[in-house]
Image (cartoon, rainbow over all chains, first blue to last red; front, side):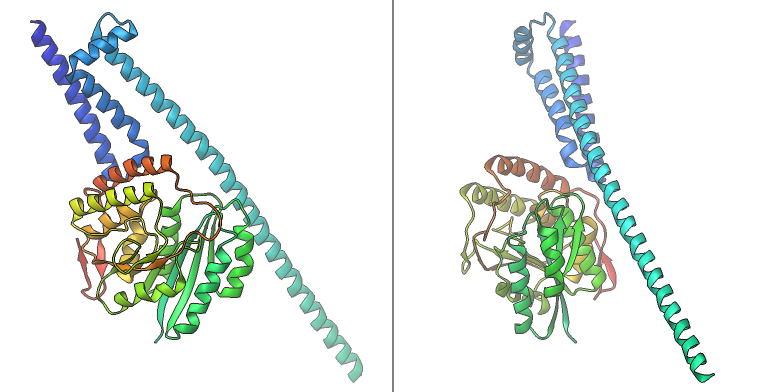
Length: 144
Length: 255
C-alpha cells in the first residue's frame, strides 16, 4: 500500500515538473519569456525531480533540516524557490522602474529641446518678416 | 553605381577609442572609391564621454550615431544598427568593435566574398590558418572551443571563432536579423538562427589587434555564466519561432 502511494506521489511530482518545464520552454520558444527569467523556474523543476526520484537524498535532506516526514521537505524546497523567484522579479521590477524614470527624463528633455527649436525658428521667421516690411516702407518713402 | 556598405559599431564607454576607429574607416573610403560607406555608431548608454566625442566625430567623419539613453546590451545595439542599415538600403552591413581591435583595412577581406556572391555571411576569425594578431584569454578560448563544438552538433556549421564581433552580412541576412537578432551575448545564437534559414556562412582569417585602451567587460565569472546561458539559448534557438527569410533574388519566402 505504501509503495502504491509512493509511486503515485512520485508520478504526479515528476509529471508536474515535466509540465512546468514544457510550459517554460514553450513560452521561450514563442518569445513570450526571456531565457534569463526562466533559469530559476527550470532550476526549481530540476531540484524537485531530483529529490522525487532519489528518495535517499530527500530523506538525508529532510534529516538535515529536522523534518520528520521527508515529502514535506519537498514543499520547503518549493517554497524556497518561490521566494527566490519573487525576490528576483522584485529586483527586475526595481530596475525597470529606474529605467522608466530615465526614459521619461530623456523624453522630457528632448521635448523641451524641440520646443526651443520651434520657438527660435518662429522668432527668426517673424524677425525676417519685420525686416522685409521695414525695407518695403523705406523703399516706398524714398519713391515719394 | 556605388555599393552601399554600412559599418555597425556598437560602443559602450569607448570615448578613448571610438574616434580612432572612425578615422580608420574614413581612410578606408579613400581606398574604396566604388563603395559608399556609412559608419553607424550605436552608443549603448555609455556613462563616459562617448556621446560628447561622437557629437564632434560624426560630423568630422560622416558617421551616423544612435544614442541609447540606457544600456541595453550589445544584442540590442547591433539590432538597432541592422535596422538602420536596412532602412538606409545597405547591401552589406559589417559589424566591428568600437574598441579598435578590428583593423579597418581588413574590412574588404570580409566584404568582397559577399559582393562576389560566395556566401551570405562572413566571420573574421582569429583561429584559422592565415589569421594573426590578438588571441584572446585562455578562458575565452575554452569558451570559444565549447561553442564551436556546440554549433557543429546543433546546425552542422563549422565556425572556430564563434565569439568574433567582426562579421559581415548581406542584405537578406540584415533584414532577417533586424527582426530577430538576440539580446544577450548574441554571437553564437545568431549563427543558429542564420543556419536554420540556410544562410551560407564563411569563416575568413583576419588580423586583429589587442584592445587599444580601456578594459574588456568579459571576466572569468561572466565567462562561466555566459557559457551556460549561451548554450541554453542556442538549444532553445533550435525550436524558437523565427521570422521568414525573404530572398530578393528568388522573390519567395524561405523557411
